[in-house]
Image (cartoon, rainbow, N blue to C red; front, top):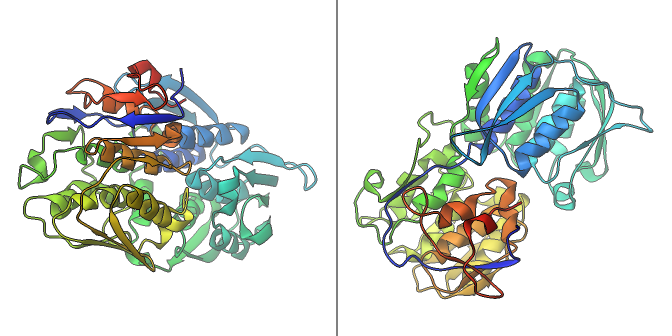
Length: 435
């Protein structure tokens, strides 16, 4: 059964004590898949996320001739154990210019930006394409870097669809800007050793970009000779459950919160691993933070904090939000619009949102086919009556069983009631999976 087109989240009637398991990191899963595909040995990825974004990567690698075995993960329904037989840099040959090998990337930025350098290592013509929104998202800096390395890339307006002429590994150097997306640099770095490339990263906060740092650390830690590699839980997905804690917080520190996430990442690879500390800093009894930066402080989980900012005791400024505008939707405008629908006072100035404290009310929330919009406002619905989420199945992009986690009994879930928006019937767990 599929999710209804509209669901209503019923606020929790009492505090919950729970320890939630969330699926594996999307960012790490898709990076690890590229590294495993380039390996000369067999690699088993345990705890790998199984969602639209990772499935499209697995399917694309299959088209490129990489064998991947998929098994259920007994520890988390939203994960899989993926066994990849590395091709040691060998890919299925592309086609001709007139009949290229087609590679579909959906709306997965990681797939689009990681596969473009990968297919350069093959021979022949490859055509990368996705859904309409992916065709609107920037690619130009990556394509410029690939051309600097000597590969031919043809793309109208420097976006997908793109025709790429793979010519195999060849030594070279390039510079790549991460002003619009750090994924440009990550895609090049993942393929750099096989390709013989030297990659210089520049642009916004290049030396300390958390996602570029994640890529570099993952490359160092990945087993060169094959074997097992464990994917840690997705910190961005975990942010929704830390945010489900009672507000105002009844404790001074995030470590003592009633709702927690099991196996919270300790590697510091994921910038959103910082979320619990910022949650406590912004919304705790001794709230200290009045400014939070998308560039310096948090990744996608800043959206969770923005959605909850009306519950803070003082206004909170969210800065450096430019990259949110070119992701799954125009997220800055979407957050301002939907929070305003709920009665929040939100001021947008440049790439900054300032959210003031205030009482929220119910509203019908547009999700813009953006998984994070749906999940952020579902958490608001745990605290505010009458929050109705439109097209909630968009969570399948990264967290297909998200609503099942909300509704499952504690301590594995939050025990929330979720209603069919049309009939107001309580939905069973089996009806809450986003297929």
